[in-house]
Every structure is written in C-alpha cells, then in structure tokens.
Amino acid sequence: MKLEIKHIQKSYAQTMVLNECSFTLTPGVYGLLGANGAGKSTLFKIICGLTKADSGNIYYNGNAISESQNKFNPILGFLPQKIAFYPEFTGLDFLLYIATLKGIDRQSAKEKCLALLTTVGLIDVQHKKIRKYSGGMQQRLGIAQAMLNDPEILILDEPTVGLNPKERVKFRNLISSFSDEKIVILSTHIVSDVEYIADEILILQKGGIQDSGTPPELVQKIAEQVWECSVPHDLVAKLLATYTISNQKHEKNNVILRIIAEKKPLENAVQVTPTLEDLYLYYFREAVHYD
Ligand SMILES: Nc1ncnc2c1ncn2[C@@H]1O[C@H](COP(=O)(O)OP(=O)(O)OP(=O)(O)O)[C@@H](O)[C@H]1O
Image (cartoon, rainbow, N blue to C red; front, side, top):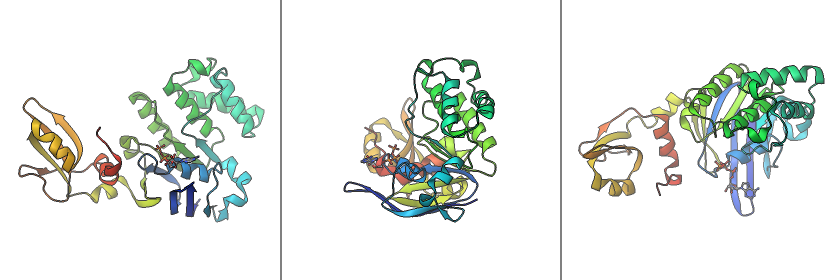
C-alpha cells in the first residue's frame, strides 16, 4: 500500500501555500506538524479531492487518484477541521446517514455504527441530539464517521481539538488499534498527541515537507541545542526577545528557562535532553508569539 504525493502546487490568489510538495506514505501513523496557515488542511483537502491542486498529482498504489477519485473515495476516511453536523440528528442517526452516503449496505450499517459508537465512548448517548453533545463528544463522533467505511487511508485534521486529557489517551489507543496495515495521517498542534502514536513525523514548512523521521530521529537533530538555566525575573523579557524559549517555570526568586540555541546562551546554562516540543519550537519559532 503506497500513497505518493508528487509535486503538489497550490496557491490561493497571490499566496503560494504548497510548493512542489512531495512525499510518500506506506502503512503507519504519520503526524503532520506545521504552523498555523502552513497548508495542512489544504494538503488534506487535495488528497481527499475536495480542493484541486494547481499542478502535481497523487498516486495510490501507482494510480493517479485525480483520474479515479470515485474509486479512491471508498477507501478514504476524513475528519475535516470543521465538521458540519446536523444538530437535530442524534449521534446514531448521523452515523447511519453518513453510512448511507458512503454506500454501506443497510444491514451492516447499524451494526458498524453501534460498534463505532461503543469504540468512541458514545454508545450511552447514541439517541441524544448532537446539539446537546459537548465539543469533545462531537469530535469523537467526527472521528467515528471517518472510520465508518473501515478506510485504508484515514486522514484526521486536528482530531484532538476539544478532547480532554482522558479522551486524548482514548484517542491515541483507538488510533493505535486501528492503524494496522493502514495509512493514518493526522495534523495537530499538540505535539504530545503525536509523540507517542506517530511512527513518523512530517514537518510541513515553506510549502513542502522540510523534514521527516521518527520522533527520536527528529529530536536528535537538536541534541546539543537545548539548555536550561535559572535567571532573575527581571532578565526574562530581554531573554524572550533574544532566544527561542520553549518553557519558563517561575519560582520564588528566579525563573527556570528552557532555551533553544546553537551556542551556550548563558554562563550557568546546562544542556538538557530535547523533546519533540522543543523541536516544534525549533522549526516554528517565527510562527510562535508570546504576546
Ligand atoms: N479557500 C481559501 N481561500 C483563500 N485562502 C485560503 C483558503 N483556504 C486556505 N487559505 C489560506 O491558505 C493558507 C493555508 O491554510 P490551511 O488552512 O491549509 O493551513 P493549516 O496549516 O491547516 O492552518 P491551521 O493550522 O491554522 O488550520 C492560509 O494562509 C489560509 O489563510
């Protein structure tokens, strides 16, 4: 199973969003990391045939999907960033409706919907109207609809938005159990969500995949560039303006700063083991603001 994204180009008016974007996915879980506006949703919509690329193509097992989107759709599951629910539908009715749209036969549809509602922890509220669901419940229903056709390729745009910590853990387990022999690609701003489940991280920046690798491989790139040091409170503002700071812990008399820098930033700085969170800051420092 192979999904190849080749030379995708996409602009909106004068803004180039994707520029010669190319990468290949085989079965596994991929975390797509990118700053706001990097083009993650655009890329997903192009793969799903909801937005047209200006040029380039996508191949599934060697076949260009633009020429056979209808054949490709049944093996695809997609959770868009903003899903349009019918608020007066119940959770079960909504899934049955999506099952009809996906062409799942009526007999197995109900069975599948109930099984998925159980998996995402909504079975007890299956007859409740969606407008009464919390944000996290709606998100879980969105994840369920994406999985309804047991897709070979599952694309989830910010799937963990609105989930509480307990739901996040459940989500990770759900993806791990689902991902066998499948391609799962998810975007998120919450680095810890992909740190544990993604086999590979893809860094989307400047219109293309700038870097990719397992979390330990990627983190290795900044192995000697993460420092911790204790500084007085009145020095923090100046250091924030000078360095990329991935964390600050305020203590009674001082502040412990975690600084990403090629050279030792302060006399008392000690090198520490980098995390994926540090790496995110390293790549997207220009896009991160503290104001
Ligand atoms: N339909 C559209 N018309 C014009 N510009 C668009 C359209 N869709 C997206 N854009 C712009 O393209 C860029 C990429 O947007 P996209 O939503 O793909 O990024 P993203 O990485 O998913 O961002 P976020 O993490 O904020 O959701 C942004 O500058 C956005 O404003």
